[in-house]
Figure (cartoon, one colour):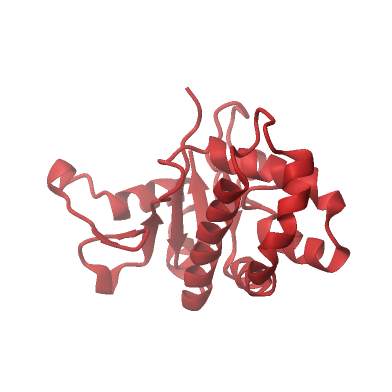
Length: 205
């Protein structure tokens, strides 16, 4: 079985008040309180799932419409971008790199948050095959990504040719160009909302 992706946006100041080793559990406990078990009902607004007391909430979970919770589509989209980026104009490529780096594609694989705990903000995995975290993006990073998304989103059609040349029909890549861009739009919505709140992002398996 493959990994799933559970994505949270969180108030970094609030999460920082919890000891590093307990931050992952704090995210889970806030969105799925153990004392409420199966009776706990969350309010959904778009793809965001909020705790019942939304006004006091300091984090929320995002439920991707296009992936049914699996991490594989995100990894495939990241691999697709790695294949395509050499065929894209430099100005557009730079914006896409800023937007996607650390979300679904790593410019430097050595920065993999599964190994580093996102620079120490979350605990690193003791076993790299069983990561504690898939992505960590600070509020400043989210803001940069939201700005990059605003620059590139109206130009995504320019990726159709590179996608056809490098990804169409290849195993381990998105099935269609429409699947690829639909996922990018979801990430655009995620970063835009998190940036509006000045919150960060955490992706857990």
